[in-house]
Length: 169
Image 1 (cartoon, rainbow, N blue to C red):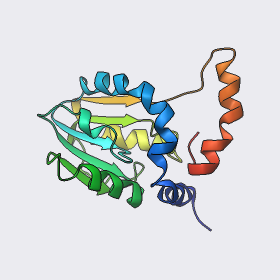
Image 2 (image 1 turned 30 degrees about the vertical axis):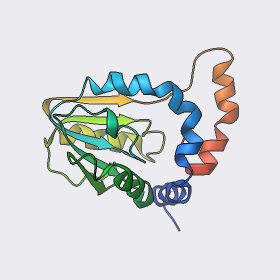
Image 3 (image 1 turned 45 degrees about the vertical axis):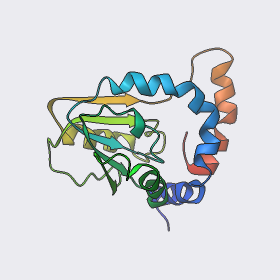
């Protein structure tokens, strides 16, 4: 039987070529968010769930980035798109729930819309805390259900679509 992590990984591998097209409506709103969150990262940065690499052009020049994703096909899209242009970024295949770094490795850890796809989110959060240095910064931009009267129920109604496509709530 396939575990939940593997099931989600397979879904992301399957949609890797269409992912940016599917995300385009959301992406129009997120450019300013990406600029804002990049003012919060510094030093040696771990990006958890790099996906197709949408954050990479927004990183400050003076940071070193280790960009991880558990989907090899998503990671390959990011690497082929940005690997030669941004030499300060290293791409690694890795699961957020089992980070293969020593404790206190990174000055900053960044996640953007990742934890909706992590099967055991608390485990992933424990891992990013473990690898972030004392005094370091964990920056998370995550989407949650809206509390607005119309938008919240609409999100509930539409949630099965991304859940089916790639395992994200």
